[in-house]
Length: 465
Image (cartoon, rainbow, N blue to C red; front, side, top):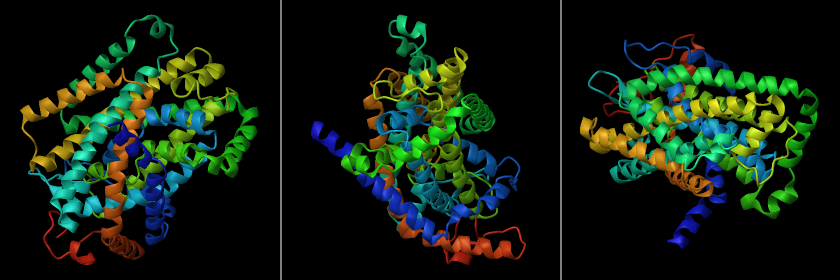
């Protein structure tokens, strides 16, 4: 068992990095650098759904962003900086920029092959485009089970651990026995209360909370940068020097600034691992490419904005990152040096909001996967059992060791990436044809509308015929 565990951890190193980098670069070339269409992306995110009661592009964006923007944006950035050096931030940026193309391809595929519910709204994800294009029910099922484990177990347990660790610098935390269990049980009960309202409640909650917490967090980071403005030039010098210290990088690549930056960047933005397509498929849009562009924006918001905010707050503080204060302690110490007592309180509050919306966004993916496994929306009794199990795992996750929490999340996301990236490479032709169709209609001044036959799909689809 120990040997299997070590081998699985090995896969989360350079093999995963190679798959993600090659996949992202391939999609970037095949889409003609889709990342450059940022202006078009911002335009389409404001689009309204055509059918009353259906989910807008913006709402689907908020669900995927809720899952992406979480404890990884605070604790994950700290772990990368403390373990690999400040240059890990640069490799997070590179990972996000390249990964934007992967996010575009997987989310566009999810829109093309989405399914229709009885009420006319849509759902879907990688399981559906795997089955529709490769005709492999087995591979689709394996992916679905892996995604349930990743988000229902690995990511949610890690989010719960990171939440309670954000309070580790407070005196009550140090003096209260078993305090981590109290945090775990409290957040689990709150989580259970919200998910019992179903997917629509999750969407409404995340649509409200995600923009609010994101704006407040960025404003707080800007205040920190302004206060420490004299340290900013030195901070950027340190970041780029560390990022391209090739002797240090290749002297121990597995634990280098490149690897840690990419791994923590992937945990944060999730581009290419097949999670966001579950939210993307729910959006009511006139053309699949629109939601592909919107989900690419989610990657940029997560890493280039929120992760950068954390990095700049911490690195401009003057506090030295070390392996000993990795995680929440480094963030809290850095913020305290800038804002005093209010700093740790704000970070704890931000962690609470970030983690809670992450738990909700992750569980949205889990329930979407259950639809595939059961062939329909599961019964209320099944959903209650799943929600209880999810709550128990969240409570337990708060008490496990940090190393185990990160390892479980790394292994889980690795399985998804090794399935989703090759599938997207194989069937990506549908996306490139759809993108060509979209650009052609836009060049004519039209609001693009999609028909499946325009990209060679002859068999009936639920939406695009």
